Length: 412
Image 1 (cartoon, rainbow, N blue to C red):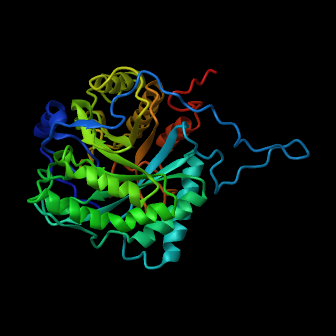
Image 2 (tube, rainbow, N blue to C red):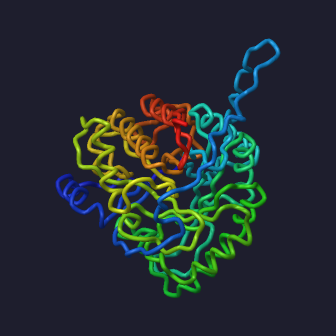
């Protein structure tokens, strides 16, 4: 079984007040609590242009009819319509902590094939693989692989399987927070004693993974995730330049939702993703339209209208009562409510299409889990969605919609 973060003891009245009154300050994320928020500045593609040339809707991947006029059955292990530039990225975030039972490369390969088949069954064309690395504390200058950090070679096995299945691939190293004293400490408020030393250590850690991304033709490499306090540091320029020289992948940065709407993200990358856990203060019985309105209210703080350069790098919510007001709350386990989760997914997908975004990656599936088995609701996070029929139906509806992608008119 995978490891799980321990549930925190809750004081309902206090927690509810904090969640409702201060989500913008504290942030919200499924694998940690946040506090503090540096005001961000700029990132390439951060603010949408008035117009954008999208690619034509691709039809070349439609299976050709056979001699008898019938259409061949789709291969359940291969993406039916492989992603091309301009198409939406319909994907899932996988989180991979290396486990003791994962002793052989053959096990890793088989598990990746199982996950790829599940994704294809959902209608996905994309996948993102997140994995942890560790630091010694909030002021540490050292970053390194931990006991649960998969090696670059093992990561390559998984990426190769996903790529061979026809999936668009993203690789995303993510700082583990075990040493940061959560909930007050999180990756977004670290303050290294020497920033130049921190970036040098980070470069050394990333190098083998950048090379693996290049060797496996990975589409995107996320060079940083939710590092609020370091956004704007001058050392990003040299690190991003090094990453672009080391891998052929698009180099991206994933910002936390609060910093995204507060201003501009100053990290000089080619693409910006957003970890998107916007709280919406509505009851559990609220219709999808109310959730859509809530999301648009948040996004309008950044910019009104289309957001063709933005990808929702993470989106998700717990299948439980009261989740709309804290969608990324990993720690709490209130009464199970699958409809809350399913309606949220439906609403987010609608926002992606109406705002002409590049796509969405749902958080999340743990790599070592069996996605075909319903979650153990006694132990599993409420954010788990694999095996929840209502949510899977919402995902399939989203991924098989006629949305052609950002800047493409679906009516043409």
